[in-house]
Amino acid sequence: MGVFKVVNKRKFYTNIIIALLGLVISCVIYYCKNVKIESDYYTPTILATHDSGEHFVGSVSCRECHADVYESHIETAHFKTSGIADSQNIKGSFKEGENTLDLNDVTFNMLSKGDSFFQHTKIKNRSIEILPSKFDIVIGSGIRGQTYLSWRKDELFQLQASYYTPTNSWVNSPGFPSYSVERPIRDACLKCHLTYAKNSENTPKGNRFDRGQMIYGIDCERCHGPSAKHVAYQRENPKALEGKFVVKMDTLLRQQRLDLCAQCHSGLRGVLLKGNAFSYLPGDDLSKHSQNLDNGNLNEKLDVHGNQYGLLVKSKCFKETDVMDCNTCHNPHKKERGNVNDFNLKCIGCHDGKTTTCKVDKTEADHTGNNCVKCHMPTTPSTVMMVQLPKDSLETSFNIRTHLIDIYAKELWR
Image 1 (cartoon, rainbow, N blue to C red):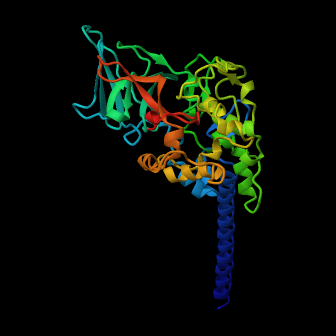
Image 2: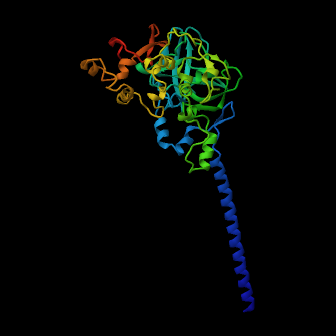
Image 3: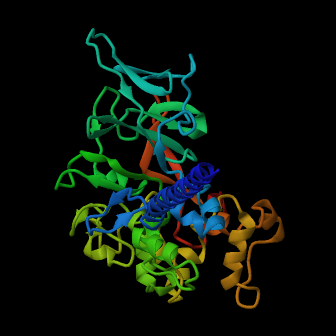
């Protein structure tokens, strides 16, 4: 009986020790896992690093606190202005009979293979074989058209075939001749379509980029700045009432707010004064980073494509107030295209019936759909953004809405 009691005691203590060991091991495992999870959470994944040393973490991280704004912003043309070339993003057709661009000296056939898409080039009257070029990057939301970029190792080139939305067809990319050529892509070409691209060279004329540091679309960080510090702070301080380490529009001066849009909507800005095309950050003085060739020439005729800023600041509406900026009429967080009522309300907000009377008679007003913008900011042919449709046709202009707010002849209302 005594031996039996000793054995039971040994089993009892052994079981206790095993249980305690199991508990300790479980706690260690749990602790280790949680340390890793917390570390990952409080240190957002870096997608790209600006030359200033600040880090981009992507607009998806903004969704944690700004879900409504994020969900509406991803539907905008800004956000969709570039992306990976796949079946969802490419608008052009690869179907037989719809996949050919025939020019005077060369034919391009667009073919798909699995999940990849290629431009096949055949120079007429020559037996030379040209390797197909892959569709890698889509440029353009597709509202008016798209063009496409192809990687060759770490170098970027524009494909000669572009997509033109009004005719739902492939066209020769704007500015290309009727024969086959290569066009290297500089960061000045990318700056209005990507939030960030890391140039691998110390020259703005280079076309080599770090493929791992490309942030597609114009997203939150393009206007609010690289946000790694902001996201880390807000995650560590979820009850904080004031956002830290982020550019807030209401803290910027009027010109700084205008510069945010002007970096892309004020022409080519071909004179670089500092860094490269992506050096400018929200809150900086844009004029210290880049300028247009026509800067200071008040008589320069501005084209409707690209220099909306220049046209706006020449408008009487802009000159007669010291608070108007692009956001007075535009909400970059929302898809606004075609929303006539919203834009009318913005006009009426300044031009109410007490101070301004529309002089157009009711019949004409009804004909225009009571659309203030249609009359005072009509669509106008661009002289720089043109495309050739059939190979023997003259170039056709893109019609872009002017931002020179003015009184126009009714023949121009459109």
